[in-house]
Amino acid sequence: MEENQIAHLLIELWDDVQKPAIFWQVGVLAVCLLIAGLIARQIRAVLRQRQSTNPEYLRGASEEGVRRVVFPLSALLLVTLARVTLDKWHHVNLLKLAVPLLMAMAVIRLTVHALKRAFPRAGWLASFERFFAFGAWAVVALHIVGVLPAVIDGLEQISFPVGKASVNLWMLLQGLLTVMLTVLVALWLAGVVEARLMHTEGLDANLKLVFARLSKALLIVLAVSIGLPLVGIDLTALSVFGGALGVGLGLGMQKIAANYVSGFILLLDRSIRMGNLISVGNERGIVSQITTRYTVLKGMSGIESIVPNETLVGAVVQNETFTDPRVRIALPVQVSYAADLEKAMAIMVEAARKQPRVMDDPGPGAFLEAFADSGINLQLGFWIRDPTEGTLGIRSAINMEIWRRFKEEGIEIPFPQREVRVLNPAPSMPIEHLGSAVSVQPQ
Image (cartoon, rainbow, N blue to C red; front, side):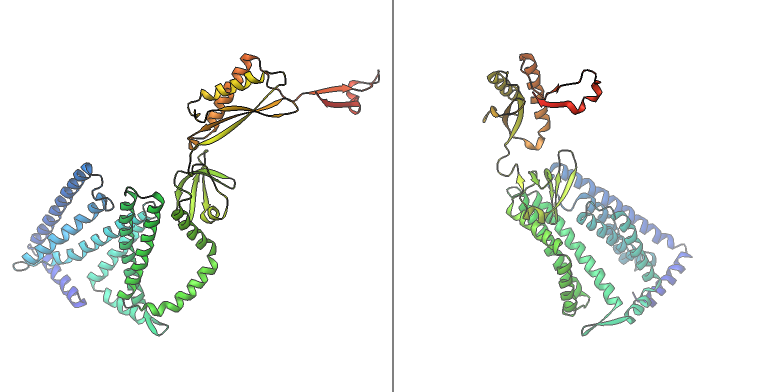
């Protein structure tokens, strides 16, 4: 609508308000909204029923998104039909005014839903939804009262050259809004593609992540490439600026770029997968998340470590569950020289066999490791197939069983002992002054 048409609409609407005939428009609008609410409720019920029988139904679009959009779109369709039908016999100024309001409501809900699909864990969406709704309703209000054309003219007057082209604020604002809209559509499509890929059987988990992120990046680039020319912004005019910006980002963000490249390498070569138990440097844990910039390791204590992907590519990584989840654990045990070694070693093997996590093939074994100062060093070796469950519990249980059985069989676990000898003490010298004449020798 032009400014004079909007002013004429407001004047006619004011005249209608002063007449009893306005109740016809209010009633028709109320009926349209009521029918739209019933349609939305029925569609929600149908979607819930189909999803209960087929969980894959509408995966990626979600019932919540349909619920948010179906009401304003249904109301917009009904109000438009009612306006066209009643325009022959009655004034429909109120219905004409309701059309842009319902369109704004549909755009707001659709935009917020696309953002929720693109950023499911973002905490700022609630604040953004209020801000975006306020901005959209403000634009609609300016359009209704006829101030929007004047604002647009003022923005067009503020222009500046970019290369050989001239760009004004209104063009930039249009470009920003168009790019935002196309990017939102691209993010929504990327969410749908990712949801489909994640539930595709027969495809490796790392390849799913790679394809999902590549599709997301390509869709975003395609959205920007489509959005800017739609508003008349020539991409060649931004080539110089983009080149300078690219050089600056390349020099200042080498580490970040290296992490992103390393992330794609990890996802493609599948050397580290979700659920692997790995050690890198001083960090050890289960891989709980792999992104294009970092990898999250959840330690046995519950602490999560964020490791840059460049570290995982450039350092030695111990992957305990890479090709074989079986892990050997060694428990050192020391007995005295007077102990029966065969019996002690048999007790150690028996204590390991009692634990259900210890594998039978290969079975546990005891070995004589070394003759130490205070006793004989033995080693109990056994294999487990579930290192991701931790090893502290099983080591503690086996040690407790060995200690109990050693006490029952009289096998001594030695400890360091020292003998103090006093060399040539003077008869009248108090014992507290013998420090200089004391020698300590191991027994």
